[in-house]
Length: 138
Image (cartoon, rainbow, N blue to C red; front, side, top):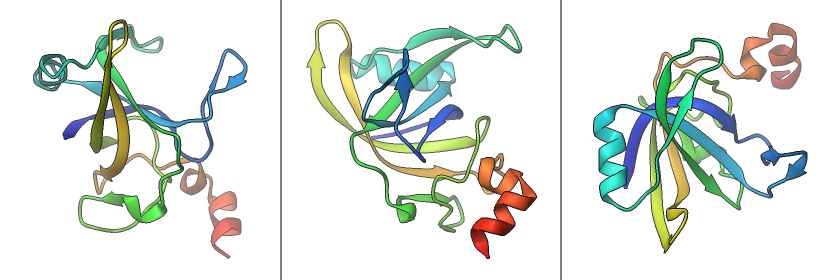
C-alpha cells in the first residue's frame, strides 16, 4: 500500500528512542490529510490525532516502522535520485508499506518498505549543515 503525507518525525538514521529506551526500530511518522486518514482507518489502521506544539494545529498522524534499516536506495526523490535518510520534517513523502497482523488495541501494523520524497524536500541534518555536509561528502 502507498500512503502520502508530510513527514513529522524522521528516525531513519538511527533507531527511535521512546521514554529514554531504544525501540530497536527505524520509523517515519507522517501527517495525513482527511482522505489518507480515512483510507488507513478503512483498512483497519489506527490513526492518531496530534497537536503540533509549534503551530497549535491539530492533525491526523500515523507511524510507519521497520526493524531493519532501510537501504539508501529505498529512499529516493520523486524524480529518482537516491537520497537515503537525508531529508527532514515537513517534507512531502509517499510511503510504501505492508500491512501486518491486526491487533485489538493498536489496529493493523504498518511496516515501512520504501519512501519517495518530494524533489523540493526539507534538507535533513546532514545537508542542512554546510560544514557537516562537506565533511561527510569529502
